[in-house]
Structures are given as structure tokens and as C-alpha cells.
Image (cartoon, rainbow, N blue to C red; front, top):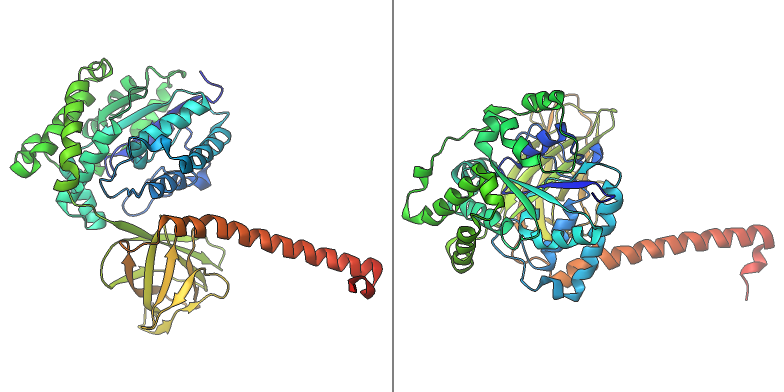
Length: 455
């Protein structure tokens, strides 16, 4: 085993049980990162997302380089490793992952996006000189579609297309990867039976009976809100999805045959077919996520919220803030690069009193007033945000605003890279130089007097 220990990465389609699997594996000793870096839960994932905020930016930086999106079927080019501008992304991943996870026997992350960038992370692990293991839950594609419709309003044909894309892409070009599949529905019924055969080959100590008992307590069967069968996919429109699900489900329930390559030919044939029809049959669904962070003055923990948005005309949003004594609310996008327009921003009290929101001075970046009274916010990957002062009020408050997201006319890669990298770095360097110069001038004035500034 490498000095870095054993990396175990949970991959798979969004809403397929990846979070539940990662949290169960954490009970077995999987280190997911420092607690403050692990994405907390919300109404859609009450127990937490198990995603590491240090790892997420790596995925988005890579996807932006190749004009990919987690909500489209765009693919990593076969020649991705010949792009000279890509080397910094690889090195950034190596420099982060090695020191961050070093010293832990079993470590890793959960991130569905890793599935569509497997070749990249296989190269990262090669440079780290450690063998990665991957685990992928397989959930019924219509159950995934039900969940995405509830959370994001995503059309069913788009959701099942993305499910197909994540499953096939995660299993393609991964000859050097050790991947185990398991059925999500089986996992909810008996998590030990689903996980134990998949981790027996890991170079770690077998989990204790107490650890398995904790897994059983952590997994909640009621999380599965859909009940679908293979026959539900027996329509001409879903025939290809049905064939992919049938093979993936068979591989998940026969891990030894999958490891021995019994399913390789069928998966390869499905991939070849998907390359031809994937972009044509399923539409891309551009999506962003607007994050809210309320830093309160009363000493209570910050409040987090989120709104999923698509490329659309003006829409309204209402975010509850409950009782408070002021503070500030930050709005920003969770992934780049997009443009958002905001207008009619106001706080509404429980008694119906409306207060126009005031932008907090010095707490917002890259804001541009528009002629229609809205403001434009460029979100480019450095968590730029728009911050508003929260008025003091004894009752509850809601933040009301209208928003329009421009995902199609986003800034070019060069501009995005410039804004999110070089310009910010130069700005910080200039600020540091000004500070040093000011200190030097003060020291000269103190030691030599005012004549020290004359030529």
C-alpha cells in the first residue's frame, strides 16, 4: 500500500445514493476530509452530501477547460492529456490531494462528477503513486428522474439521459481502475450485504461488528421514495436506457463476474452506441445553483440555503431567514462560470413590511448596475457574491428577489480564467505591495524624518 493509504472514491449519477453510500462508508473508517470542508445537508439530503468543498473546485476547473457541464452529455476529449494548458489542473489536483489526505489509512471523496472525468483522476492517482478504488451505486433511472424532477424540475427525458451518460462514462476507459457496483435499492434493504463484498479486497483492516452496526443505523430505507421495475422502461423511447440499466444492474449483483470482465463486451457495445446517439437523443440541461449564506450577529451558527436555477427568463425566489438581529446575507453561485441578474430585492417581514435590500459596502464583487434597474453578477469560480445587509426585526423575514440566469452566453474560458485567476492574483499582489510600501515609508519617516522622501 502506498504511503498515502487507500483511496476509495464514490462515483455515480446524482441522486443515485452516492451520498448515502459515502456516509455509510464513513462509519467504516472512510475519511472524507475535515468536517468544515464536508458539504452539509439540506431538505433534499438531510444527512449531508458528503462532498468535500476542497475537491469540488477541481472538478469544475477541469469541466470549464473542456466546455463540459455536469448537466450535459458533453464528454472529455480522447486526447485530453495532449492539451498543454491542462497540466496546471493536474498538478493542482496532485498538490491538493496528497497533503490533504496523507496520513489516513482509508480516505477519499464522494463526487458524481468524478465519473465523467475518470481518466483525469486515474492520472492524478498515478502521479500520487497509489491505487484508487471506486464504488458506484446503481439506482433505477426513473427513480433518479423522480428525484431530479422534485429537486430541480428536470424533465424525465433529460434525467434518464444524464443517468445513462454518468453510468456509461464512469465505466468507460477505466481498464486500470478497480470499480465495484452495487444496487442502491439492495443497499437500503441490507447495507452490509451490499458493501461488504465490495470492500473485502481493500488493503485495510476488516471493519468491526460495531462499525457495521453503525452503518445499519445510518442507512434509512425510507429515503427511497420511488418504486420502479425494469418493465417501466419497456418503451421505444427508453429502450436504450433499459438495456444500460439491465447490464449495470446485472453487473452490480454479480460483482465477481464484473471483475472478471464478463460484462465488458456488452458495456463496450453500449458505449459505442451511446457515442452515436447520446448528443442527439437527450437534450443538455444547463443548471446552476444559487447559494445563500446568512452570517448572523446574534452569535448563532450561520444559515445556509440554496436555489436551483436553469437558463430561463425572470423568475421569483423567496428564502426564509427566521427571527434575527441583523447580519448579512451572501448570494453566489456554487459553480462557474455563469451570469446572474437580480432585481426587486427586498426583505419582507412576517407582518408584510417590505424593506429594499441594501448592498453591503465592500462585500460584493464584480457587480454591474443595468439600465433596467437590475444588477449583474458574474460568477466565475472564486465564490464571488452579492452581499445584502439584513435589517433587524423581531419576527421572521423572507428575502424576496427576481433573478435571471444567463448560462448560454457565459464568459469565454479565457475571460473566466483571467477573472478567476490572474486578475485576482495580481490584485492581491498589488495590494500586498502597497501595504509593504506604506510600511517602508512609515519606517523611513520615523527613522530619517520627512526629508527622506525628497529626491
